[in-house]
Image (cartoon, rainbow, N blue to C red; front, side, top):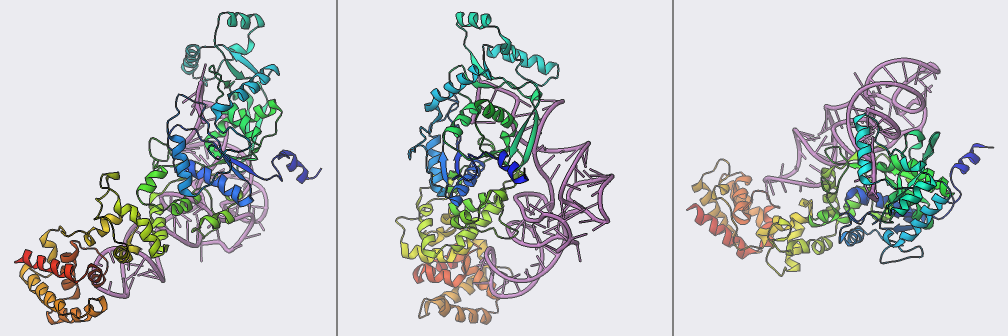
Length: 507
RNA sequence: GCCUCGUUCGUCUAGUGGCCUAGGACGCCGCCCUUUCAAGGCGGAGAUCACGAGUUCGACUCUCGUACGAGGUACCA
């Protein structure tokens, strides 16, 4: 037998050569962070790359932790990123339902099948007893594991427990010796000694299945070919392999993708250190930029390309280029990439996309107050044209352009006085500038600039000294777009008014 | 503690035995452009490829060990 044949045998026929079907299966216990979306993105990209299907399944079997609105938030996030779902809640599909709580009977059926075949058993231990066992094991520095008490119960004992009305769970009877090999497409073979493995619960006393059984039954029934999940699942993979074996099913191809870590090098967590998709949206990140950034977290195309549109990503994405080492999420690089994407936006589109951020009420998100509404599209286009390459997020737009819209600008008077100047010299310089501008025939930046430069020379000032004062006078700040373009957009009347106000301040 | 996975510039990464005196990007620094701030251009610092053995004519690339980090160790996913 050739080596190729061996590999084929390792890889179940059910998953090789078939149209790929990949799923993302989150539990609705909170918002989904960038790490979760990244894993979903890889599955989606591969499905789109191959013409396969992307399925969303909600793993809501832990009813105590389910949070209202989590699924809606997730769906909105997918929509924001442009990740479309072929089968799942709302869209439906031939393998539904796509909520695990609605598939309860299925898990029970297979749990009982496993009991019947001797691969699982009923466990009557109370949580109290389990806690006690664990405590003792810890005291003896033994690995905490179920002591398999109920695995060896006699028929009579089970009958009497039933008669006493004791509740029970179902546990998987792990092989006591030998080893389990988990074949992972990214990591290769991972070998586990069965003696180190636990008899895990595969059916809870409330009749619902925990992840281990539920996801596996669903993946099989939904004909999933490739399973991508976080590497934090590696340690339970041998259980899953044994489960597949006991059920007589071929496992799908398994890919444990690296986790995304926070600055603290800990796994990104919903409650601790991870932003949600809506945080990015609120702060004015472009979904295509965040998508591009996420794709590069644990995947790379080559040694230089890193800007990918959604379509380019689909074309370029393959699973063999997914990495195995977890990486730290770097907000600085995302910020840079977002600025890059903003700069690439056609001006009209920037205006359109920046509008919501300029119009939003000041109470929202603790961001700067809205500027006067309704906004004039033509005027705003001219304003944003000047700020375009200065923007890193859309969220900072309102703040940056506010002086173009408000009648009263605020600043500290000393800001007007440039290096090497004093109040009187500044006042005189501004007065000269005022008079010159008054007589300018066309209010256009390239018309105003030459005489103003000449004025600076005449007054024996450096351009920066004269222009710096005017800059503060008309904007109230020291960092702005180019002065004369700013004046042109601001208009003659307002510019003159502000210079007059500055002169008055210095008097 | 035990089990498992991982380890290339601060960060994301390229690299599959000789193309590597290790390439790109973000960030950082400098110069140029310039009325400010950006953007852009150019250049720089920054990795003894975690460490130690071994295999080999030759190792970032293969093997083993060690260290460190992370994940798991629930009737959570």
